[in-house]
Length: 78
Image 1 (cartoon, rainbow, N blue to C red):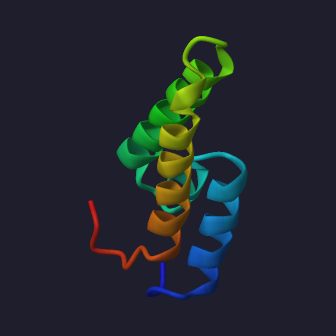
Image 2 (cartoon, rainbow, N blue to C red):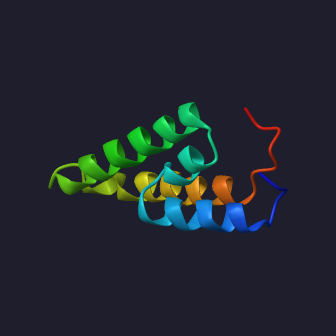
């Protein structure tokens, strides 16, 4: 994949916007994709409960981090 700001990174960021970690999976970073997916959905799932609704910002932070990570990937990240 080309460097930061390439069309591939834009596509990966768009993928991560819809499903956290999908952009990393598109870029071939499977471990990071699983981490972002699991952490985002665990915290979003906890936020869906009435008692633990305050966890939604943590899920949103992981989701946003996933998008930014996909958009700024330079190719040397493991």
